[in-house]
Image 1 (cartoon, rainbow, N blue to C red):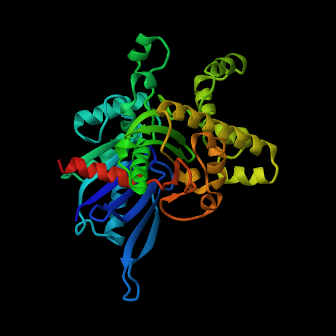
Image 2 (image 1 turned 135 degrees about the horizontal axis):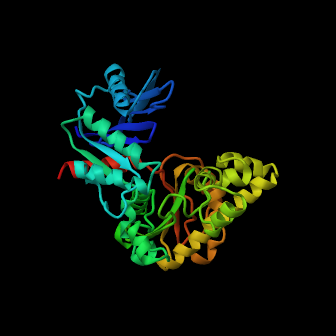
Image 3 (image 1 turned 180 degrees about the vertical axis):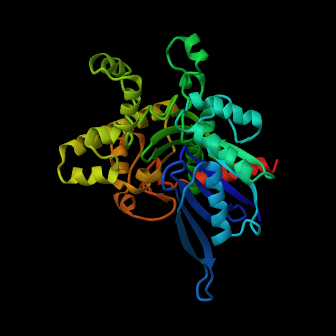
Amino acid sequence: MSVVLVVNSGSSSFKYQLIDMDNEAVLASGLVERIGQEGGHSRHTVTAAEFSPDEPAPTFVSATSERDLPIPDHTAGFQVMLDAFAAHGPSLQNNPPVAVGHRVVHGGARFFEPTLVTPLVLINIEDLSLLAPLHNPGAVQGIRAAQEAFETIPHVAVFDTAFHQTLAPAAYTYAIDRELAEQHRLRRYGFHGTSHKFVSEAAAAFVGRPLGELKQIVFHLGNGASAAAIEGGRSVDTSMGLTPLEGLVMGTRSGDVDPAIVFQLARRAGLSIDDLDDLLNKRSGMLGLAGASDMRDIEQRREDGDEAATLAFDVYIHRLRTYAGAYLAQLGGVDVISFTAGVGENSPVIRAAALETLGFAGVEIDPERNERRERGIRRISTDASDVTVLVVPTNEELEIARQTLGVAQR
């Protein structure tokens, strides 16, 4: 059995999954949160298959245990995780991980593939905290704590930005002073790469065509949202840039704005750099427009006739259509369009509205298919549609585990 532990660390929490790579089944998952705060919390869920002689396939049953206790740092947090495995299973002695895979948000231009963590790699990840101050420091803490907990097995960093390292200079270069940009590494990097890679490969397998011959657009629509244009399995354009702030309208992030807005707010409203950062990242997007960041709330209020929610919805859709049109032009047409993540997988209204104007490009949505609530990958376009439109549940943890195992087996 080849078992991989996947860890996604933040500054005050980390999520984990233990995955049996022989059948890609999740054996356990969990969350350790409020690290370094009063009242730490952990949740551990074990998934087991139960077999019945009357059923051809096993039934998967989950059992969850939770604890409230002080968790002063990530090292203590990993001990809490190990205690949960020991108390509730599955046993790590009987299911020893062959490697630990770590999600790292920003790899800059240095890391373009999953990378074995060495002291030098860790220094570089820490150095890239200048580009991702909210994300990379937590990843570094998590990696160091995991290395203490699992000293004898390889640790692999999988970068959100790596998939987009295939962008051409024309796609990643900002039109600002060249020397200043190079000095401070100011360029477009893109994010959600692990998800875009997983979804585009899953879509190719579903339609039964080689990945290398497909032109695809993937919309990863969650609280954070991004789009990617993918040709032959390679990212050629993506909506996020230097940071995850650029691009689509998101739950609390503005996405694209005129840069001069920040000058105006600084001069006329007296906002500081930190105020502006907080405004654009935490108080904008759907929250700023309508007072709610959850798309389900926005859709319900829109149905009830709320004007602010209606405008927020329209702005969100306008931006989606803008990127869809841009990527159709960049790719010279498209074979597959996929929706993924919380909003993309669960909102038929968003999917239909986003593609409503693309009939000229051969996109034809089947309303009945689009409205169905089904698990797994599914087609929502008509059989006559020139473009296949899919809903593809993303699985970033599995993609991280696959890449981690690949490095560990080299």
